[in-house]
Length: 165
Image: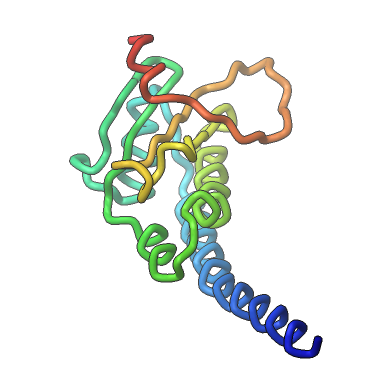
């Protein structure tokens, strides 16, 4: 019985140790996001969101961001950049569907809210690396009169979006 308790404690300790670099990454990314948002930035179009968020804030190269859909109110992208969160996740032998929700998504939402409070960020966790060839994300403008709601996990499909266009 003592051995079983030791194994449980050891496995909990291993999981806890894996969280330390993730929490450190979250802290650093939030700090960067906070500092980046100190300079006010305004958008006039979703193309501005593409430039400000993906190119300026995330510092992605244009060739690493495929624009799947770009309208007046919606931007859908697939990112294929060298990603530090993906690299860390693979090193820790964890799941990006967990680590990206923990580290990346809250900071992305924070930054986009500071660019324009109407911007909503969604990531399709069924289409994320290393399980897919890129990370599928959607940013859209919610109507001004829409009341805030609880953040929920939303799944949207790349194949459904291509049918719409």
